[in-house]
Length: 436
Image 1 (cartoon, rainbow, N blue to C red):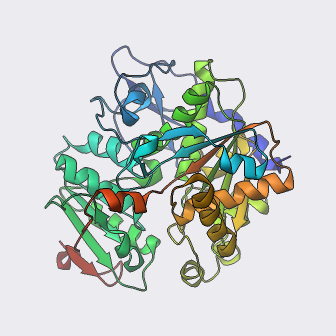
Image 2: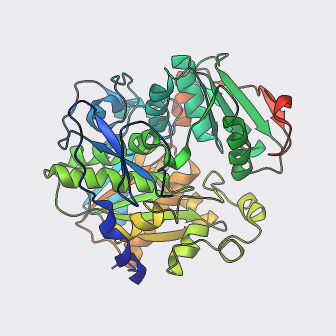
Image 3: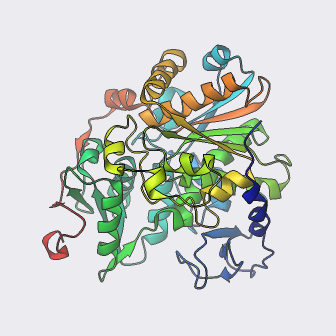
């Protein structure tokens, strides 16, 4: 029922290395390409470009008796227990499920919805990345540097305000409207606003330059296992709630890191043995007209060819409804990345129009009773398309990741503060002394 790529058969078997872990560490890092194990935190393998993956000593998921994402402590690469009520919340859908003729549709809601006990106050599942990432870096003595199209910046700024960990956050001009917090911003937040003609990738390039300075530390993006395993708690929460892994998992992607995270969490659940014997199929979606990963996948290519898959990228990004789903350098081709995740799960990809994404947002709010972000509307639209095309069966277990929502609800409960820029940068090549 899903498109299978012949090249996939060459890549799947390499991601199950047998590594012995010393008795003391909670985890080590394993290169998904060459299998080398590392016992110190790092972002890259010494000899391979593949992603590193956390290999946890505990092969059984034992939940901690705390609220939020901290209950998945065994499979988070942090030593200190994360104590926050922020975390994914899974519930069984009735209204949307009935509308689509589905018997086992489960919503993973990642936003603010107190009636559902959902308390992500920045309203985005990027908060799931921020807590473990800043927890890991709080004792490094360095400032964390990251780039964001908006939601990640807000999430990291929120956790920075809570923990005092200093962060330098580079955001394109289009993302400044998303720079708000449910508490007063603190001096630990250093927001750098780029020019109006810059996009997310320009922000990444400037952040890379900043992170090379003394006292700075690159956050790492998709290469940071704390980010991926934080997002992986969506799959863990859904599987614990259902007492099994889903047959299908739907999510909209910009970089695709969330899709990789869902796959990696599923591999751990498979090894646990209590949640099923088959990996969930990944259904990942992008927003037209900027769909480089979709184009490469449909052409059965591991590599993204820029002139073919994303010609005039800035123009295309400007035309997107969900413009935060834009990354000109996604971890698609890298070993252990999006391409391999799709191969391993017999997954598929969707290209969703602006009108269909907007219809998805409106349908979800009308039926489920909560507002959602444009990327979540893209995911809803891809689920509708999968149902219409017969890619999912009515009685199969389906998880729909609503990656952001509840802004209207949080506005009624909190005063929202604007984060003022610390500095401005017209492009990614400005002298660094002008913005530090």
